[in-house]
Image (cartoon, rainbow, N blue to C red):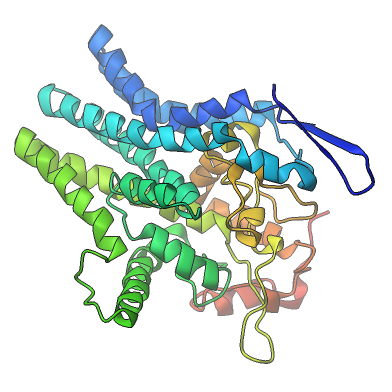
Length: 397
């Protein structure tokens, strides 16, 4: 284990060891999980292997989060510069980029050349879709950094799920509007994930194009130009997916449609749970208050955070967007999720259960204390929510 140390202002030595240092290698698992299904099938010819990646994602991962628990450890602030300068952590994000391409192309070749039962085909296409949805998470970590290499790696990895507009929309749109009614990527209380998707997916796409159009206009360039940073990633997607269609024919049509849909669905799922119902208050000048850690839902669960580059310490990320994943902090009294993202996705997919659990949790937050005026409420559900809770909300004991 590497030991970081510094002499502080009081002439005291401050030391820190990242106990998870070598465990961060688990971040390389996400891109390659579907290959377990491919290799298992080729070795045994048993189609149940094609379902194994989904079981690992949505059964094993939530169980490991439950068993391993949470980590609330923070690095000392005086040592964060050393931690962020450590190339080891950066290399892991770089490595996930080719792994997403290797896994995606391998699975595409496999389904294009093997005779599979329809349900096995579907399970594997969904699995690689989810795995490549987490390519958006890799693009998220890389796209927030200010080096040219990391910016281009973000564009390249976002081409796999064909979601090249993400880093423009997320960095310049979502971070500006997060936890406000103006943000299509912030879910509102009383809004199911399915209704949210109908607002979030097209809303984010439109916002990205508007942001990029305005940037290019300032340079007197048309929106359809090679300097359009959304198009740069999309062009890679077109080459990649068109090549598969030419190589393997019609079977690629359902495969790519399923893959792309579930890749996008992963981001929708993450966006839904990350800011559900949370609201930045509007000030007298019409502007919203500065984004604070309590404007995001947080999760400290060890296993899923290792796989997702600490994405679930989302509160610190929004308060400090350029901070690298290994340095993201836990804060006390934050909106906290009861499970990592894998488990929370499953809860969100059943709206009645989600509303029953999360609405009560939302109302009990220290900065809300049952005040519905401090919650981002879905306009279509507003009347029903006020009728249900209103002044009669009683926090659970």
